[in-house]
Length: 367
Ligand SMILES: Cc1ncc(COP(=O)(O)O)c(C=O)c1O
Image 1 (cartoon, rainbow, N blue to C red):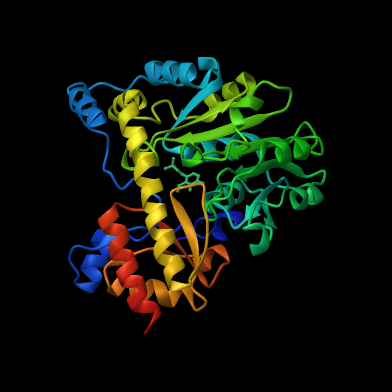
Image 2: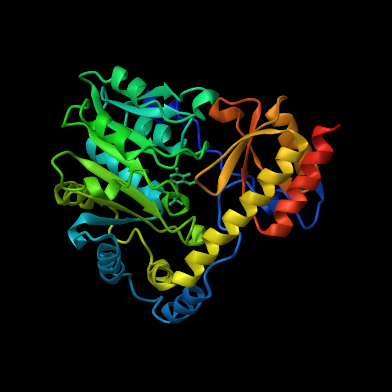
């Protein structure tokens, strides 16, 4: 069969998600394995969301509300913006795709930190545009995003800049002061995408909060998700907060029913469930305290995070440590594909899962 595929599509490397538990158990014949690989919420979904979704199932024969009216209204109120500033997505991945499809054409460039979330590159390149990578600062600055380095790479082809706050996979945050200074050096027609997938976990009082920059005279889009702190990764609900003009453009390329009715109901209930969110943050903080303590005791180098995952310097092949941990029934993420061949990223789990990780880690690194 002969089909014409654009060169830039042929060059795409498909996104490799964290290894699913079922796949590990099938391949290795292991039971009771744990997954600390995809920065998911270890608590399970909010009960309130489960109840709301059960009710919503009764109307599954109807198309969803394409505008996501109630969810959009609630998100607008919660974020102190207008409903016109919100666009819902099938996960925040979807919004990244809408942005690149709507605003990039072949020949354009988008700047992004390296490493950061791999979908930026895939989406930018699938629009035929070019991803330009700006390495993070070194370990002495905890691998924070190098804003000055990004400014140096701006040129007339630059249309979009991705900033991840907190960053994945390093867990660092951008300070508001640094962002203000960055903005003063960035031309006002470049779209700034601030990905806040993990913002609920951030504790730095001086950190950047993207929505403060909406409708302030430069194009800014803030990405949020229900996949992390709200425990609904499987539902695929995310959203963007943005200037009204940008929202109107995205709505031209958005699929009419990109967020299904069950997901809308679940997200709506989760937003009201403050107890769940509070518990999520407490579980992560307690988990981090435990994990840091254990790793300190082992003399292992790791990087403190403002998120629900963190990097460990394993000082050997991360792929090897990943494989060894798999055989112990523990899935983490090797950072080789992110350009850190001696680092693993570990998502904070429930206390028993964290203990299980530490036990397995001690075993595999002392081999
Ligand atoms: C930085 C970052 N942005 C976006 C996403 C995508 O999240 P969603 O599940 O909303 O598509 C992830 C998922 O891991 C992420 O790490």
